[in-house]
Length: 111
Length: 113
Image 1 (cartoon, rainbow over the protein chains, first blue to last red):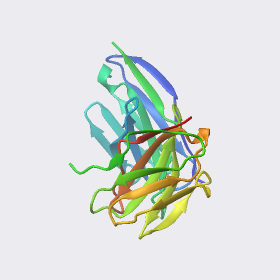
Image 2: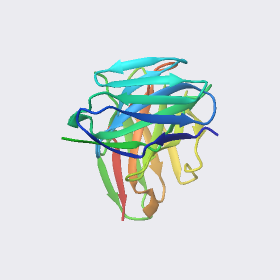
Image 3: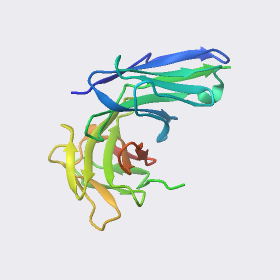
Image 4: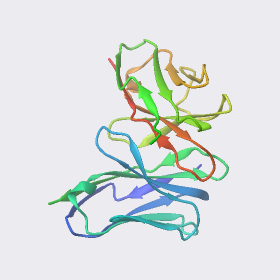
């Protein structure tokens, strides 16, 4: 059974600082996704990581995937208040399209 | 930009009543899903639907739940006899195919009283 864990669960950081959110998954997965969710809103796709060593960047966010370690990271560079949200990673089992979501990381960027 | 549309945005229902949540997928997408998110918790998989049949379902998706795509466009989730613990945000998601990401609708907040 595929399990996905994220840490930290809560992250409060100052504007301008850097931080990393970690996403571990328990069995082989061929796809890893990052989503952002604002309070009461839907899930917005941020990144799709399809292969080992994949790295994608959008603005102040950069995601990477290490399939050997079963680890994905979401790195935040020089955080700004607008990045405050909950970030979820999700993985799929090989051969399926069922997304298993992590617990989410609630990020709060303080001015 | 194409989007997944869900109706209603909020539904309040009495315990024991039936509810139907509706989703209009993106037109060329082939895979359809329902997920739910209890307030403050993670997003949980309920069911996946492909080629007009259920391809996978979770243990949450018991006999009280059903899905169908009756007219080739709307994708519905029916809960036959709602319980208090069914209160959650329900998300529909659709996927075009391999290597692409799922697009999520804006959700239906179901409140069972």
